[in-house]
Image (cartoon, rainbow, N blue to C red; front, side, top):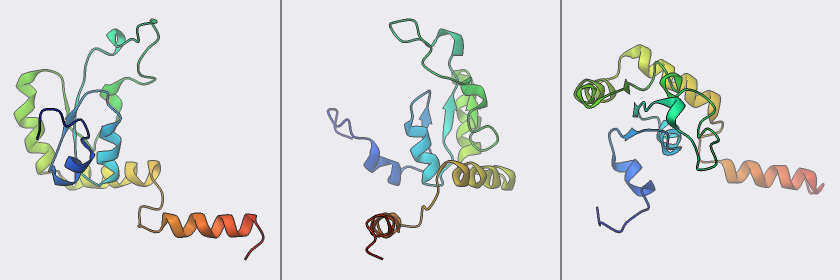
Length: 124
């Protein structure tokens, strides 16, 4: 990966798993149906420069049961093993989260939008 390449989205399709802390990119990985790894940082310490919390929920509970969570470097290898070889329960939980947060991941969103616009404009 080129050093100055900051667009990680093309690499999501290539990756078998990913490690992330509180980045929203973990949600895009979920949308792809892939198991990522959440590196849980001390929740109470994560604040914006104005003192407001970065997150609204504790990351140790985010995507629980679908994505392995790690808390320190020694957890990395077991987390990667779990993400690359998910149990049936993990697969089912991933689909449950995916279906809850993302609807219509069938490549037909444009057609649905056009149909909705046509209805709103009374063209249908």
